[in-house]
Image (tube, rainbow, N blue to C red):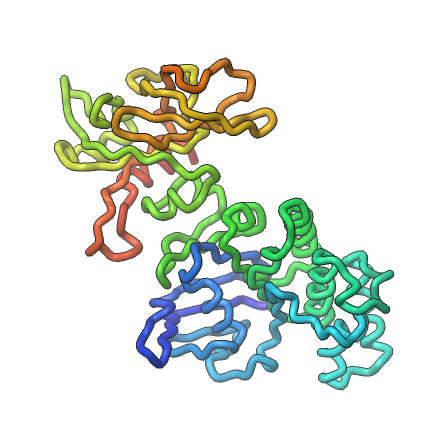
Length: 383
């Protein structure tokens, strides 16, 4: 087990493309950290720099108390689980799991003990004599995990390990990975493009875009208090609703003018928006922050909409709505409501869960683009 530390990490390829920019992160011993972001954001490249599979072209990376910039992968005391499992097809499960230990010239009795102990943890004791082609996807993934566990590494690295599994098995394996981490207490760095995996697995989430860190925090903190519009729109299913408009002042009250309708700016957000009167601002509200019933003690947050389609989700359903100027709004409501497609309706926005963003600016720094104007005030409100 070990701390993993990056200081001003950078990856520049020979053609001059900079895949990772000024990466600074301190992963505590025994922590489970998830890198998440869209394809091409640099998350896998960063993981491979930790593993030694990509050269670090700037900054410092350390595992434990040792700087590993120039340390060979085999000497970094890490174990990596790949997306495609990387099992040897001609070897049995037992031999696949034992292979790395044999290369280390570990005594056979010790190898056997470690392999069988890992197999017991993963529930694959009866698969040890099979070859990979005789296994299901989930079983192959457990073998790949077992091969990592037997090495008893200082750090586990996972590169989108569940992406080849079907939806039901992914959910099951997520739970098993979390239980495995709680049992082994090994420092873990996990890469995924699936925000649901990130939210359910990580002690902390690192949201990346275009090679930059956008935000680092606990899953709930990043979800509730996104620092910019990218993070707000990337995390959450369905994603956050965004309304383009401007801030106006009438009768001593600040309002957000959506174009055809106005919403009262809540008192807690007013200080952050006072300087934006007359300026373009983006209002963000998550689907669960909208309801067909008024929120207690709130006024001035009514939204007149046309109901388009429903997506049933069991006890909940997603309702797709439109206004005269915004044609893609999603609300998550109870499944037993009586809304009809094509009908007019009134929805209410939860003032306590509003977010106000600067409009995206192409010349802004990546970690400032679409800045959340009221994030500090919102943290104080909802904790």
